[in-house]
Image: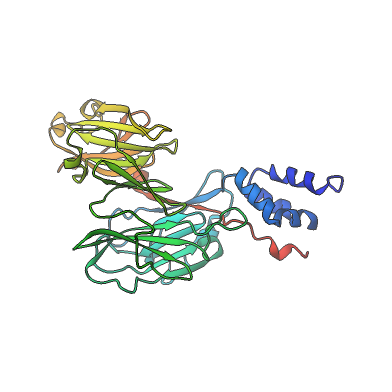
Length: 374
């Protein structure tokens, strides 16, 4: 390969199809290792190749107070040995923790059995499973019994010179909490610093915000007729107008009639279940929300095991949302079904739909420094 000059070599290496193959290429010779370890090369490579998802941690506790340890499922095709993603290095062992958020190669977990809206701050860690390292997250110094924890979001840290890796030295955590006197607030934790005292620089006024849902990269809230979006890569908030769903949107938004999740194409979908009809809206490139699909639930579910027409004389309860699907149940009835947001077809619920999953990428950049002198 000495026939290639350095520029040609970098062009060849940029076309290596995966991060794992890139590490293998670095083992070929000292010259290749130096080329691959160069910060400019790593930044360019990261811009051309999406980071590989090694697999998914799933939490199937479904609200149970105690559960088994989180399970790690390899992506397909597998790129690593699943044993490298054990959480047994965490204090108390893996069964002591429940996943709550993920970002890149990092996973945020809190103590198993902790419930939302308790007036206490959970024991919480952020870890990088592949390197078996973790950091405990301390509570805000002014946390008091007027606060109720609402949501925790793992946010990207400061972009570094090799492609914007979020890692243990630079991650951030956004904590949303309810104050009984003044509504919903947010504070940001930054590694090496502390929790922010003033949220004005990181968030809009959180009073009267309603959480609609979240996808892999964003959290979505409503305030009146506005949709507030928290970008997980930056920690920044933006807003857009909600679609004209109903004239009485404001009176129903807090009654759990409106939700948001991501479709299989990665784009967010707003959906509403009202008067037995599900409507799904998608955002156009210009930021406008338009009606994409609708379905009459009593017709879509006809023929499913256990179906009764009388079920749809009652309001429908949204039991769970996932990427590309919704699980619903008639109010006060022990019968559940799923709706595929792409096809709008109904189907019985399978066990895996009840799992909350958290993707975990391989750490970036790859660790090559130890072999640069070899």
